[in-house]
Length: 358
Image 1 (cartoon, helix red, strand yellow):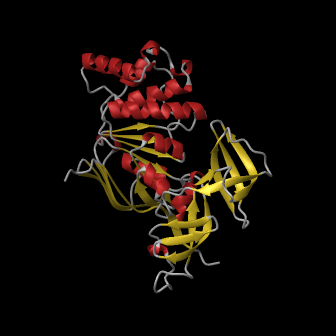
Image 2 (cartoon, one colour):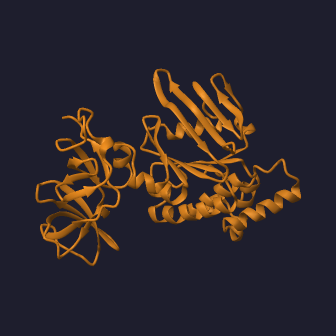
């Protein structure tokens, strides 16, 4: 079995009595792009700083290429870890040109090799035409590419990206996130991205860890985080959706207001149900793409809000029983607030959790 390029084993980090990272473990293979995704103050940037060697850990161990770089009371110096880092504010040197910024970390190479590597990186990130410009003469997207090229130029074993798109506008973030993934993959880079934006995480990462209160609640693919969340927190944080009360009919069927769904939900039955059967109640996650607009359907729902999203409209609906649900509908189905529309269920992945006691 291949040794992970990066491995964190039961690490803790605390400031006094405040635990910031709580018994966190993860492993990342070479060439994989990982992501720590979570809300502000969940500990994700602290994890990144621990990996880089900027923060100590109070317990646990961190390994790079099978070599221990962190444990309680021991921390290998950041410059000895062969890690590249792209900071939130890019941290470019304002007095250096684009080429000189990229060249900055290549002092161990021979002069000729350095020049070739700078030229190569300029081509890779598409900045060969601004090689002699200074950072203030560049757009935000160009500055971000310079920061990425500078971090990749020394061929680090691991690249860390700390909210690298947060200072850019939404459209530029979406475009650059795809470009950055292509660049990282073309270089065979192993990387970890930290972000609170799930769209960035989905666009760039192969594997994503959703963080909450200093812990990784689920480490998985974007598809599984959306369709197979392991907890209520992940279900609420990733994507959109609502929980509808469901009555368990048997181990394979659950009934919600909109109809009967088929799935194995026996593991979510309440602990006091000796046999999974009628009388056990669960909360069923319904995503906007689970409710389809169908003019021919006899099941009607009232539109109480609409959000135009170009090709789609996100409708907020009041169901006949009074519950609220969401439906993402092609925008040529343009209906007014207050109007009733026909809907039907098309649920491919049933996600259910035991009901929380009031």
